[in-house]
Image (cartoon, rainbow, N blue to C red; front, side, top):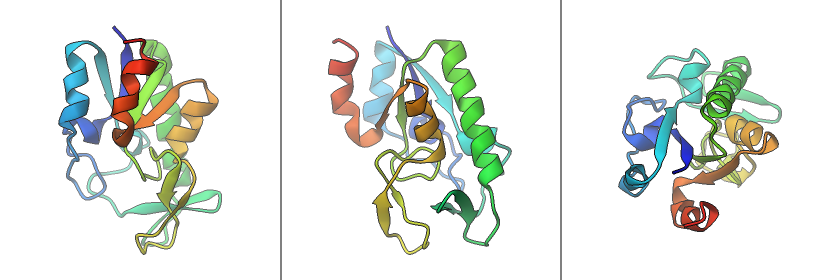
Length: 148
């Protein structure tokens, strides 16, 4: 039985920037055989829900209102990593495209819906710390990684 860190919005928690979720039934089905541990890095970093959307702009995370929220995103990522390490998790399923949780592709910082190559703050920290990151679009790859 693996311990898997999961973006809380994918588990149905209304914690996304606009106060909704993106519940993923395929992910929830993993709870039959594994322990799913929800985290919302943005909330862990002290941001409210709902909140202004934010995107990575260079080395900062900026909201669409022009506010620098890099500190909150960094704090949230560090807290999520602490939770992952404390729980003994070595894999995470995080929300695709997010400035926190996106892996491989994120929104490009123009708030136009355009995407670019890159990782969110939490996904990058997890990867650098040895936690394998997947998105909800890669759940089919998990069984082989988990040795099933």
